[in-house]
Image (cartoon, rainbow, N blue to C red; front, side, top):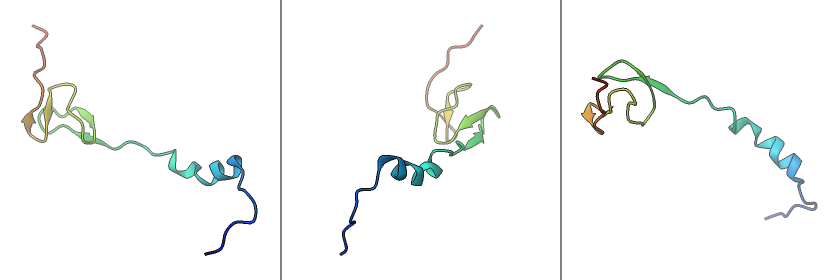
Length: 61
């Protein structure tokens, strides 16, 4: 397999990798309370994940 004749500078390497950094995180709607939630995370409003109670949230009453 051929080897590079010159070292690729860090700037040139990083310029090639820049397209991976501008990724928008996926948001979904909670099936229990309809709040916006990051994908694969427990809902911060109600504590549900995939239709089941994952954490018990203290009520504000």
